Length: 88
Image 1 (tube, rainbow, N blue to C red):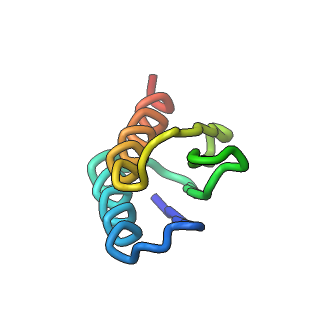
Image 2: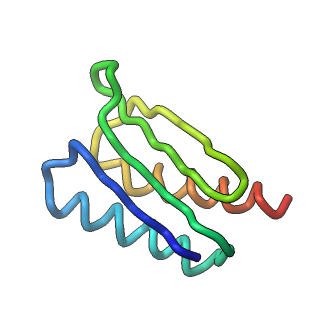
């Protein structure tokens, strides 16, 4: 599975590294074919984050109203759900 990960607006290097670690962990445990992209960026709404997952199935966008420290868990769970939906 080819996976591009783009993270914008996360200024904490530790947090960015953990997001990437979690995303790659999910992608290794649920391999899929094709090209995939994952984009994380601050939302236009204060205190929110947007997550866009694009793959052969199309795209899915989710917004979170969460503290940045929760992003790795939220993002990995959303990616896992998107990957599972492809085989459902």
